[in-house]
Structures are given as structure tokens and as C-alpha cells.
Length: 464
Image (cartoon, rainbow, N blue to C red; front, side, top):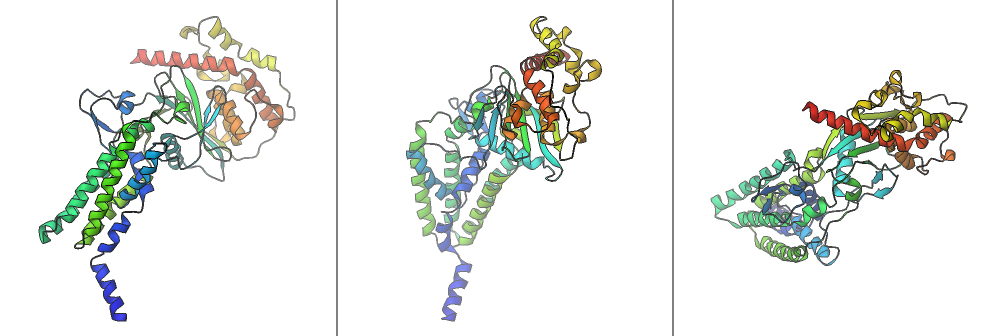
């Protein structure tokens, strides 16, 4: 019995052919996430590519060739089977986001649960690249300006996919040259061809960038919710994607998707049967499939820059990052505040907008400098020492100063209340006084900040 067992183990490790067909049925979810990460880059064949154009990502009617390098691996057959459910169900290809997130419209405080793969990975990668000190930091807020969608920029993950496919082909050469066994080469070539055909389905791009573009400025906040320490505030401009819509948009279902999915699943079954028939030189096929699996895992989980998502982001120059520190502070004993005085503080902004037509030459000096020496109200003057921003409230107050309305909107996440502000939901008097003033003057400050950004953009265009 011992000799028989030893012989069986020796034979299996010498040529593990029986395990190959079983391996092809595991890891389908990894393949799906890898495609979701890599999908989007296309080679346009009929027209010149516009670098900053929504069409480069969402137009699937022109003659173009999707280039999505997700190598053949053991999980592809399982993925092909799982997509049969989509063919007869919701007809969707993209996976659901891995973590929950909230998308907030900073103009009115409306909230949506995020269902966008792109926004989920954008926030995840941002959290990884910008870690916070769990002990000393209460909240980190990053303010970014959002430009139009642009063509994807290939990175090392994208190029690694092509190199992996070439390496798999290289694995299949020795058994053919040395032993005349072309079965491994057939499986590798057919597997990568079927993988390429699956990734070419237009439905991937339709779902990944479903939504519309903005006609006017909109500020959006993205966070995991109360208790989490990262917030991304994105200032959208006309022509940039409407991330509030992107959060829940699914895209139209293309008619060919269910038929193509069924056909591809049948072809994957044929490939599975072919692999089951191969008995010799199994290590070469095992090596090629294992290499593909490693590429799939890395592509599905790798941290990437925002340029690989089609989103065009740049830091808000006036105040790119705000971090609230977990430190003690002395509260104000008096919570009362003169709202009429707060209104008078922002009266120059109201005059500039409504009486002077927001003319660039008449812009209040303190709106640009945000300094009390130029006339900024003391309660609106930003804290210059980053280490002096106290806790979550302090970070949200600084956000409200730089992006009017955003702090009040995010206040509803971390200290739930209405956007008009409710006194009972804020504990410390020093914070009550600020939020009363902020809520009372929110409209005019938002209008003034929008007008200031238009002036800044005009100046930028003239300097170019």
C-alpha cells in the first residue's frame, strides 16, 4: 500500500494533468475584478483621438479596438459560467463595489450610496496612498478639482498584462519544440483569444462610465461615512463628469451582451473539455495558467493613479488638504451668536454678486486672500497652522471656509442634522457659533466662491 501511494504521489507531481480542469473552475471573481480594473483603453481606427473627450470612454459606436490585457488563467472558465446568470438576469458585467461609500451633493446635502466601481476604487486607492495617523488624526479632507473625462493613460499594470500574455506563449513553446506536443500552445492561444473577446464587449465601457457631464459647477463629497477618516471633496466644472449621477448610474443594456455571453460560455466549456483531454507536459500548462492567475490577482487589487480611471483630478491650490487633529481644546462658554452681524460680515460678497455683476475688478480682496487684514471676518479666516485644526469639527469648519456649503453638507454625515443646522446636534459652543453663522450665510458665500473661481479661471486663461 505504501509503495502504491508513493507511486501515485510521484506520478502526480511528475505530471499533474488531472488537476488542470479543476483549477479552471476557481477564481472567477478575481477575473471579473481584473477586467473591471483594466477595461477602458481603446485603439481608435476611424478617427483621431480627442485627448480630453467623453467620447473616448463612452462612445462604443465608432470603429475602435478595446485593448484590455487580462491574461488567460485558471479562473476564466468559472467567470464564463458566472456571466450566464447576468445573461438571463440584470445583464450587467461589472462587479459591485467592494466597500460601501456615500456620495454627497454639497449644495443641498443629498446623499447616495455609491454603486460605481470607478468611484469605489478611486476612494480606496486614495485612502491607501494617503494614510492617516489613527491616534492623532481625527479627519483628513482632500479637496480636488475635477476636469473633463480623458482617455486612459496606460500604467505598469496595463503593460504587465501584455507581458504576461507573451510569457504564457513562451511557456507553451518548449513542449511543442522538444516533444511535438502542441496542445499547450493551443490552450494558451485559444484561452487568451477568448479572454480578449470577452474584454472587447462594449458593455464594460458603457457600465464603467455610465452617467452624464455637468452643465454647471457642482461640488461632491465622497466618504465611507461616520467613523471613517477620509473625505474627498471634488469641485466639478462644466464638461466634467457628474459624479453624483455616476454613483448610481448603470448604463444602458446592449442587445448583444446576453447573446455574446452565452456563446463565450459555450466556448469556455469546449476549452475545458480540451484541457481535460491533455495528459502530457502538464507542468507547462500549469505554469502558464499560474502566471496568468498572478497577473489577474495583481491587476484586480493593485493601487493605481486616477489617470487610469479617466478622471482628471488636480489638487485645489488654495487649500489641497485639511487634517483635524485629536487634541484637547477649551470651549467657548457662550453659544449665542448675532446672525445679523454675520450677515453684515458677508454683505460685501452680496453686493459684488448682485449689484456689481461679479465683475473681476470689483472682487472683494479678502475673498481671494481669506485674510483678516484684507477684511475677512474673523470667524471665516482660515487657520494657518495645520496642527491647530481641532478634531473633526475643526476640519469641517476649515472646509466650509474654503468651499462654502461643503462643510455644512459633510456635517450631516459626521454629526447628522439638517443642512439648515439644528442647534441641539452640536455639543460645543465654539462649534455652534461657527455653524450658526455658516448656515445663515451659506447661500451668498457659495455664490461668491463660484464667481471667484470663474474670475480665477479667466485670469488663468489670459495668462496662458
